[in-house]
Structure formats: C-alpha cells, structure tokens
Image (cartoon, rainbow, N blue to C red; front, side, top):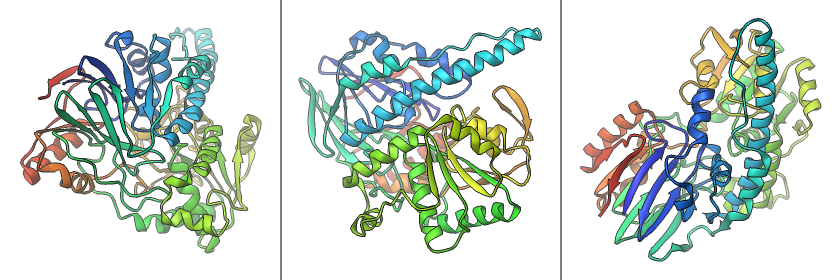
Amino acid sequence: MKITFWGAARTVTGSMHHVEAAGARFLLDCGLYQGRRQEAFDRNSHFPFPVSDIHALILSHAHIDHSGNLPTLVHNGYSGPIYTTPATVDLCLAMLADSAHLQQMDAEFCNRRRNHRRAIGRDDRECIPLYLPEDAERTYPLFRPVALGERKEIAEGVSYKTYDAGHMLGSTAMVVEADGVRLGFSGDVGRPGLPIIRDPEKMGACDYLIMESTYGDRLHKQIHHVADKLADVVNRAASRGGKIVAPSFAVGRTQQLVLVLHELMDTHRIPSIPIFVDSPLAVNATDVFRKHSECYDEEARRYLEKSEDPFGFFRLKYVRDVNESKALNDLHGPFLVLAASGMCEGGRILHHLRNTIEDPRNTVLITGYQAENTLGRKIMDRQSEVPVFGEPMRLRAEVAVLDELSGHADQRELIEWMRPIAAGLKKVFLVHGEPESGAALAKVIRREYGVEAVQPGRGESFELQ
C-alpha cells in the first residue's frame, strides 16, 4: 500500500489523500483548500494526479474542506463511486449546490468591484468560479450510501469499515484494509459531550493511522461552560442595543448554536431578541438534521420524545430569500444573525460584517476554527483593519470567541481517542493541522505511546507494509 498526501498536509483545509493498493487507486476525501483567493483557486482547480486513474473515493464527512472539491474532480473526468454515510450524502446534496452558487455569486460581485477598480487605474485579475451548479449536479449520481459500521468492498482486495467520529452529522473514522495492511483514517475527531450528535466511537485496530491535528497544541475549555459564555455575549450586546453577527458553519455549528439558544431562551437566561439563521444552506441542512434523527444523542432525542422541534422556537427565523437577508442590514438591534461561511471567506456573512464591524455597539461572535489567512482569523486576531470584499474596514465591534463548541478534539481528547489502538500502531501521520499543532501533538504521541508521528508535506509519499 502506498499513500500520498495532497491536501490538509501541514495545513487545516483541503483534505485529500491518494492511496494505491491491490492494483486500485482511490482517494480519502476531496476537500476545498481555503485561503488566499488566487492561491486557493489555483490549488483547487488543478489535481496533481490523473483524475481518470482514480477508481473510487471514500468520504469521511460533508464539511466543505473534506467534500467541497468533488465537483471539480467530476468536471475533470471522474465518474467513479463516492462512498459515504446516508446522512453525509444528504448533506452533500445541499452543500455542493450551495458551494457552486456562492462561488458564482462571489465571482460576479468580485468582478463588479474589479470593474470599479479598473476605472480608477487598477487592473486586477478576473474572478471566475471554481465550478458551476451543473458540475455539482453531475456529482450527485456518484454517491453510494454505506451505513455506519458496514464493511464495504470498494475494489477487489480493498475494503473499509466506518466508525462514528462524533464530529458532525454522519461523520466517520474508518479502517481501510488492503495488501495485508490496515490503514486507519480519523477524518475529523469530535469531542465528547457536543450537542446533538453522539460521542466519538472507539475505532478498530490498525497498523497505520492518518489522524487530524487541528487542535494538537491546545486544550479546549469544558463544554459545559458554553451556555454561560453564550448568554454573557448575548446579554452584553443586547444591553448596548447592538447586533451580534456570528459567522457559523452552516452544517453542524449552526444547529448546535440554535439548540443552545433555544435552551437559553426557554430558561429566560437571555432576552427575547430576534434570532436569524441567514443561510439557505443552513436551512436545507437543518432539514437534513431533522431527517436523520438516528444520529442524535440522548439530549436531542428528548425533544423528539416531547414532540418538539429542537431547531425551531418562536423568536427564531430561517432566512432563504436574498431580499430578506438584505433587509436585516436596516434592522436596528438588538438581534443575532447566524450566517455562513464560518471562516468569512464568502457568502452572506460578508455583507453582514460590512454593515457591522465598524460600530462598537455590535459584536462579532467567532464560533469555530479560523484557518490562516482567512478573514475570520484576522477578525479573531482583532486586527485593527480587515479587508471585506477587498476594501479595508476598521474593526471596532467587540470580538467574542466561543471555542468550546469546537467540533474538533483537542490534544488531550485526541490522545484518549487513539489510546485503544495505540499499542498496535507502527506510525501515525498527522494531517489537518498547522505545523505548530502537529509538532506539539507528535511529541505527546511519542512520549505517551512510543509511536513515531510525522507531519507529511504536500506530495510526500509513504510505502506501508
């Protein structure tokens, strides 16, 4: 078995690993690389291997940094199966369509700004979408749903089995078997106690492990502090009459925040302010969450037992229409808006930020990981001036960070997750993490288990036997 790391190698986004085994070539994930606009476009639009040589693809979960470049793969000639869980299939149908639409809209907006800049003597490159809605549509028939825990043969002599990763609805870790080698792939490992979804499941034994390292150099605050911290943020902004704008991943994080806000409002711990979920994708994804209650934990199931909707309450409004979204910019606070994208790299959140961040009464609530060079990271770092649609704006709003809801396990949780399989491991490949986090986690793995842990670079290959 040979593995080559092409994505999420010493960075957090763009998960994609190329495996050759038993005469077959297949991919683990095919995610969008997110970062500086032109660099991201160049990397995402060119595959470093012949796409026609790929026999199959196994998808760990639906987040765009793991699934978002599937339409480009199909556009370049891929026509093989995409194996993943039923919940992930349903989420991808919504997410890939939304991704294609957003890329078209962002390219059009960027080019309007480009035309304005050309009029004053600046000649920037034309923006074009990475892929179109028809590319997303051609991807859908390739999905092959495989139930969680089912062993599936994807080629002669190559099979895999999945385990609940506890990261988001339908997310999996897996063990791939071929050529007498058992290769584990963590996908993204979740945290015990996250709202809605079940805790991460113990994974089967393996010889080698590809493991994420997003938070490999830090420890999260305890999850039970989430409600207290969120209540403080809402009450503080409401007392100023301000708006709360929360960049939020439309799938997973938005639904978790809605559930916590639901509980806070039910118990009168926050004022009865309007709450808007301003994202067609989040609306569609919430419908998928409602459909797949088999993935729920006990807390979420209690709402069903009482015949209540965990994702709906009287002060909450889901916004699909773009004109309704624009109308929120003229609405006076206090109110709260959840909008995508989670790293502020596109979508409706950019328009809300443009109308929010220069007013000190307002709050920008960061609720998830922000990759290097993204607008979300610049806001989280509280830079005095940040670019929105390419134009500098003063960051005068309060910035609050709610990292307790992170869908990624921290250093301690990753070490505990791998404990049951550590004794049989020959090597660990750390991916989906910046160099510092991977280096810190590798050191702890070597100290705790005596197992070599390496951070592969982009394009680096390893022979496994």
